[in-house]
Length: 208
Image 1 (cartoon, rainbow, N blue to C red):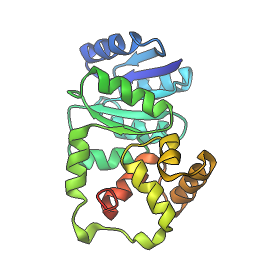
Image 2 (image 1 turned 90 degrees about the vertical axis):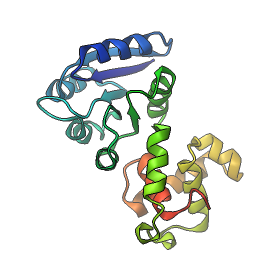
Image 3 (image 1 turned 180 degrees about the horizontal axis):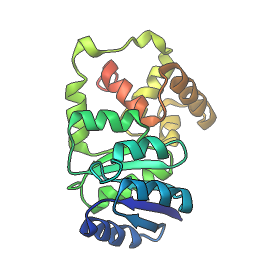
Image 4 (image 1 turned 90 degrees about the horizontal axis):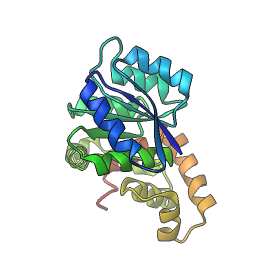
């Protein structure tokens, strides 16, 4: 059972998310709160697997809450505001996903499950904008930081594949994939798969 904390300053949003998630047999909502400070308190009390956080909340915004919770809780940022600086800061602060509120029920559920499994999901419209934004050659990082095989693994992460799918695609063992990912995170100094995917987009690996 995946335990979820919802934090949003709009009661209708919290009620809607709770209804969507609690219809799923593998998801339970342990708390829903209206502000960032309450989110941190509730997370400490309930220790949820996943936290769904709005960005603009009273007391403490979702970006700061993400930074506080991400070391121990998977965070999916869900917001009306998909401005590039918000996406970047959320990912830098350790978010495991980024959705806009119009993404739809199915994508919300998928994002929770992906985060709980250690994967990442970002709204398609946000992904497209990030790909376009990071396509500028001047922003591309140095590919020589990674070995050719690590680049292969990173490319598949950026395409949204799970560890098992990457193993099958590249004819590697699951343990080898995990070893490569651990090495990549250290070399790139990123917290999670979203950070790896962001680097891949900036490096131009996704379409290569």
